[in-house]
Length: 468
Ligand SMILES: C[S@@+](CC[C@H](N)C(=O)[O-])C[C@H]1O[C@@H](n2cnc3c(N)ncnc32)[C@H](O)[C@@H]1O
Image (cartoon, rainbow, N blue to C red; front, side, top):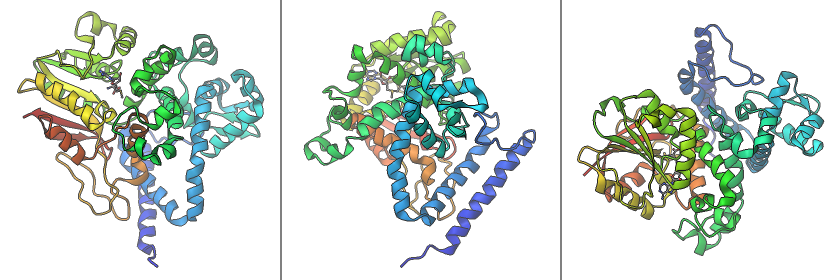
């Protein structure tokens, strides 16, 4: 029997101790504030970036310690039960529980009152909220009385419950300045989770799971549809789901990963336009337009998304449209790219939606319209292996060397990357890619990797290519 080296436990405990102390010192340095308790609503702190490294190390070490110490069956049952947390979270988001509770403040609201406001069953919503409170999402402040906490406060859309009821789901996700987190949680706990329920059927049917067709997925089984997810979203009956999906994409731009602002040295662009391809409603381009007034930007997407994009820009930054600095354009990226003077072709979380054959068509269309100076920037995950001791550094990388026994991908910290890979498998028969997958795809489409930029140990990276 191989025993856990006693050093491993000591190292993990030490990582936790040292980094919790660092976090306390960072808070002390910023006005002597103590670390906010779980009961407090979440506030984004100006000095938050400094906390990322320390928080990541505590998270990785604490989860690894639990995996070592807890009986395996308990850990497996906890993993199984994760589905109830997912679906309960989906209920809380769909029924606007966080909005209901934010009106009640810290004293909270009895399940009976919550049920009245949400028009649901009191006993069941109480049990759902107790489960979530046990997972530190919401808190039970007296028997059957629930209040928001640090985690659940993020679910609040900023609209009050009467406004949401009056205006419906589409409007819930369209509040100016809304970071898009409720929509992100809504999409993950609805379309994604329902698709995940059919992964077993899919993987045990060779004809289905070996298909490279992006409309052969667990999503197609779950929603009984023959088209791919994007064509399904364009069906009129799914209009409000599309609004939520677009807002969810905005939420994913705000979820702490590298953004368009860190993706490139934008001051170096003196000529030509930035083309944000498959740019959605333009949430990344909005950040760029606000920060760099010298850039001309074209956001391209499908017709219905461009329509939503116009409403979004008119609300958020109408001057950029009226002075012509930003244009929204309907363009199918499988057809020749009309912009021939691009300084940058920018694609954020687009290629991960497409299996290799489709991705090649998109990349070749861009290559055919590139000038010798055009840069192609992908904001995508680079999937790390979970192998201890494998050299994974890449050009431009500043991935810290982690002390053993921590996994080199920081374990629980970077689960989002592997979750995203599962989402791609479930929804679109696509995938997140390792660095080798990326270079193989780019080599055959005429693009050469010149740089990689990352923020901290995040797997979301900016991959910068030039034409060859
Ligand atoms: C995952 S979203 C990413 C959106 C945006 N880049 C972002 O980061 O928020 C992929 C986008 O590709 C768009 N898309 C799908 N098929 C397309 C096509 N054939 N031509 C242009 N855009 C398309 C979708 O409408 C969607 O907005």
